[in-house]
Picture 1 (tube, rainbow, N blue to C red):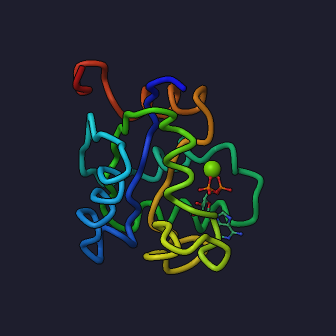
Picture 2: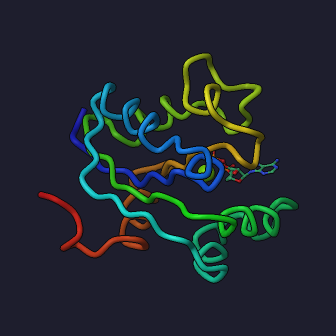
Length: 140
Ligand code: ADP
Ligand code: MG
């Protein structure tokens, strides 16, 4: 295993319910260090670009609206196997299928408003981190 970084987003449904601290505690208690973090309100253009891989999916327009519906917290998490570790802590996309104790099982409202995003590969993590953060904004 190697120390990796991954891009996490605490989505609008979670910031609205003041869940940032509870979600961050789960990351920290499980060995993921928050090495960069900022609260932003994504523009439609940014949300469309960020999720463009899903542009042909039926849920794309609604997903873009949702991601712009309130502030989000974007963060870089660092730790051993951070990409896979974060996906494990998040749980399945559909909270009804997420393992007990995962962030989505605990907090998600629906398959769309599912509280968190996490990069799904090291390659996408690097691309997504560069999308949101300048090198000088990341500790270390
Ligand atoms: P994940 O976030 O687990 O990697 P995907 O990359 O497949 O999941 O989808 C991106 C996001 O799109 C999901 O986190 C969720 O917010 C939304 N989404 C995925 N599938 C659906 C669906 N069937 N209906 C509504 N929204 C969805
Ligand atoms: Mg995904």
